[in-house]
Image (cartoon, rainbow, N blue to C red; front, side, top):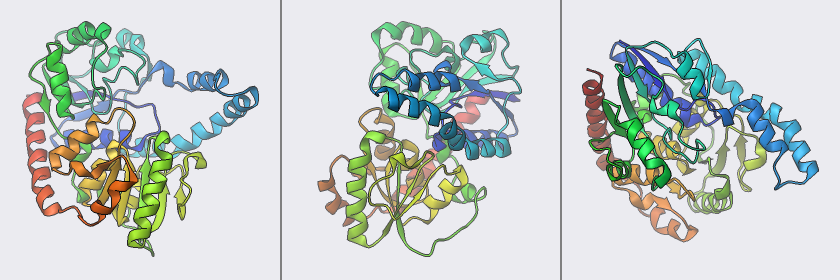
Length: 370
């Protein structure tokens, strides 16, 4: 069966492309041909992003000019290694689409259409309802499935609820990666959604290691990975305290430049590739993350970690930690560190849960694809 998958494909977030790879890989192992829709949101195009920097009223004229001039370089470097990964491991539609109407006008042809994971139904991130992610561009007689779609928000905008309900009622099967999303969908009259694990958790550590080298490091380190710039100070303080307590160097990885670098890191890895991301996670002794996929890979790789609570859209992190019975690993203050260091995570309890959820999610996919 040919499956057309639409998910976020226009940012520099490594987790975005690793979840894309894992869902594609699982579907291919089931014997299907998978093609990812080469889709870009209007506000994420190069020139739209350039305009944002040029017209940013929060900066003075000099800062705006500097940000505008530097953006093309930063944009290229942040996507260079990600694009290489995409070319090597992912299959995309030959046609590139920008915005809903380009898809509606000339949609890719497939037997089944799927909304993939990531925050595809987050209206704040998408600047409103993006009907592309709700598969509103395909013929009504085609089958629609959502795997691990994320809403991210605590509630829908009342002005959007009826439209979201209309769009989701067309789906043959819906699954989400947050238990809270099931309740949220029920509240607008969309019932029967299933909870599944994020696609990155469908593959185990050994399967992830197949696409990266087994590089080792000469020193033991704590790894920092955060996609929440506002958390930089608290992440720095927490990482510094933990590293001092257990005697580790501090490494920091990012898909961006050094502007987000925390103060006390010993090594900073900028513009990293997805493979380098996996290698650094695999070799870390401890992780301080402020990211859903940072949390997911910490658990999947059986690492000691803390997940610093982002200031918004943290329901997906909390749902994952609750599933594993380790809600205490999400923290908001440095005072919580002492007790956590003394109580390491027991993965002999978590791995059976993860294995069971992996089987359940795989079975869901089999049923949904029939």
